[in-house]
Length: 309
Length: 309
Image (cartoon, rainbow over all chains, first blue to last red; front, side, top):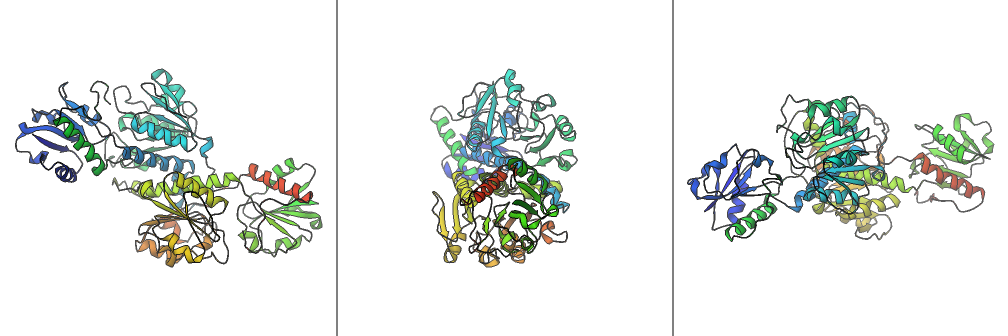
């Protein structure tokens, strides 16, 4: 049996090479070059096209190459006989934390404003925030969110977190469930969204919720574009309630040329680079899962098809 | 006897108000409103005009409102009967660290490049650096430099420091003296300059020294504009040896409109805002020094006229 690599908007070759090297006795095939679709039992996926897995009648394991699986769950009809797994790699958490640190401290020191000032040759000192007087709230306390919350709290920020189920993290005030969302958002200077995308979390970054933040707050979205109600954000930035937004994820990627986010002075756009899967360390996880699958052992980082994460 | 406030390019009123409030029985006068110059024995200074203190025959204490005193030492002829003091306020160190954190992590994640990309509506992912594989070197290990080195090291960066005299800081590899400067610079990804400005440190950020850094390194100058040989920096950025520079201090401030730094894509200009003296906490230090002076006690944060810091 063989592994197939099904990637969209991502080069499959480095993955094919490294997996073949680490699994010399297994056939690793890129989707466009598969000869016999019945021989495939393990699929490695990145944003697969709708129902593409139906072409492979014997697929047993679907492995996402990212930490998220919404691009698979919303496009394929997986059955209870199939196992969906994802990448949980500490480097993804570390990279995310370092991106957020750049965003948080940049906002606090008004770096995006100084970039604009530099363009216009304007020399104007502005006041800044300091860590000890800043409250950061993190939506989503999975592996990455928990790591980020711990690191941010250790730096001296007042840190709050919110998740679907109850979490206990030292020095992080945690809230859970829809009833406690408002309380989690209140008093927040910087809101970080790292939630998984599900029917319940879609559009959670709405005017109604964002208005619970402190006036002059900053939104950082590293979850999914579908979490954000775009028109609501633009309204709150334009009327001055929110000071800034840092957006790394979008409903359509790459962000379309005509999209208003590109030209908005209070929005920083980055091209989905907060945390990029590292082929070398992530391929170790794929290899481990393939071997466990062959040995009929429980797989790593299994996703609940029902919960969606 | 009275206190005089002599400020250039800085509003003296908030200082006059807060000092008068904290010293209700002392006369606090702004330079332009002084009636009897012979009654002044304590001067609070920010970038005073050349020899302006000669107008006050009975000055005994000159207090800088910043952490640095080069703006006083290079313009006034202080005698051994006069005491020069400066502000040492932990908030200055904290603010500096937070500014540097924004600069360091922004450089690592290529945020300045994404700002330019956004302007041009370009969606292009770039590789990034991670803390565990990045070496930061700090020139200047006084109060602020030592604080910054400790904090940066605690975040997981390989951290080196260099100063005139030997310093021992846990988890920071420290070098001292001219002979060890090259070794301190070698292998550096991010160089931070926080040195005091003296005859020996002027022009220390020269091509010769900057070429000791790793290729693709970033320079962050929060010391003084006079530390930097501007033409050397531009050459090293243009030929690609250095990747970026973050400059918060300049030989002439505000940075003149025609200066090439404004329009250089690899230079981030900020208007001397890394660490701004906080009037409330710093005025406590001024008040304490004024009281010690009146009580003939040793003053806080005395500067050696010979060493210049």
